[in-house]
Length: 420
Image (cartoon, rainbow, N blue to C red):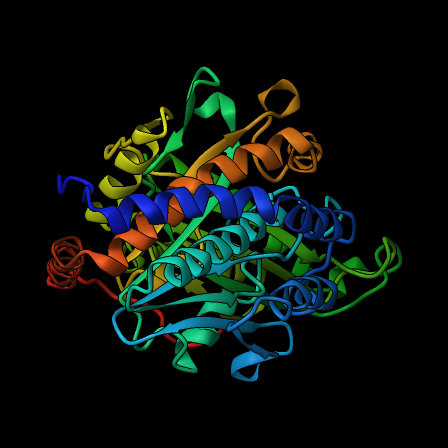
């Protein structure tokens, strides 16, 4: 591991980062609560966009572009000149029905506070380098970062950092702040449509061709397929249309599915197996079938030099962080696509939640709005901001980051680059 540099400039930067986080605490808390209490779905995050941009517009020397890269709820802020480019991502979209049950208000908190801290550190030390905060909408559905990739948002980026909350129980006691290493599964999403023939369900059901039967048969076949998939693979779906009323034989039915695997190539191969289940269901019920590709997210690759820098930065603050390289989170994120574009890091930190609930649950959503979860986010921001500044000013670390990314590229699999 590259040891953190011990220079007067670095020590001054670390002190400034700590002071900055304290100075901006209440402003960032207000943004956090605005986002948490007003959950907005993909590409509709106008309130979150405006709240973050409002703070950024008050910071001297920061160049702010609202509605950036052709996306109404994206933004970009930049400070500095010359040197390398460091990006922090901010997510802020919510989930339908359960609000910020994935804690994106805290992701925005960590991104915003880390950006402000590195701005202050660059200003205080006069070091070269550019730091950006990129507003990335629609992570939960819609692939906002994929659209940003297509628009060139990550083209000149030397490193992209962000953090995501999960249940503290994932890491054990509260003295362990999280896991610096995070790898996620790739996902391929698709829908299946069945077309049959309507009929009165009581008077002449024999005249109908039941599309819902095809959907149910396919759904059941997928349940059987699960017995033969690998431990790290996942298949999950819902029936989105099963007919209009009970006395009409359904002439149309539709399902939406996601399949996950350690690589996108693996997910696409699993998708082919799943589609065969539905094709068999169509054949057995006499329906016709059509499929629609709904896009997907690449697997998330962690840049180990950044992982190590964060672990060391947190350790210097007396905060224990795991670096469990055997761990794979069985979820997916469009940050995975970013990790194929530039050196990337997506750390995980723990927050309290009732019953140790994990993301995408109501109990986790309640935990994401707590002041103690916000405080935990700021403690992790100090480590991420320190690691980010270290990347900007230390040539050895920057070279290690780039070399690790180039090594990863040698093993690239298939990666969906098109918008969802």
